[in-house]
Image (tube, rainbow, N blue to C red; front, side):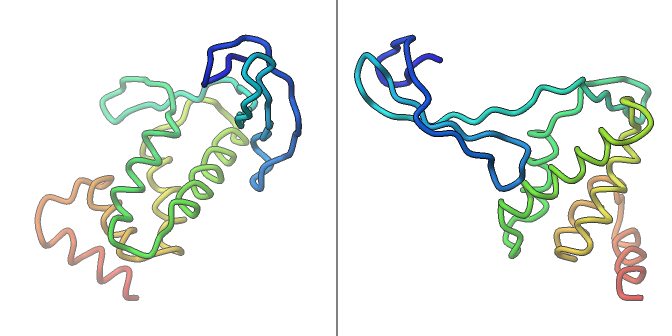
Length: 149
């Protein structure tokens, strides 16, 4: 591990803890060259999930892309970044636990939308408007009527 302060390559692990989500390991490290401490997070590298787009293209699943989409949908709502991170972790866990590692984007969108609906309805509508490609006001109106029922 390279020290972010001095670039030294010799460090020692001072403390190790599981994170709250049990998906990552937090390690506190000390540089043997400059004696400064820093924190690293380790995540198990899994086999890559592949997203099948609507036009048939395939691309690697990106937690960051999903998180950014959810953050945009949740702007100016009460949905915290912690809740978004938890939702992304739940979605990824469900996708990895499925039958295949190739998943249609529509399935991912529905999974995310259903979870988001339980957290915040405004963020849900915003996410759905992009995911379902609402074209006009009538599309919003139909979804709002479904949500109210």
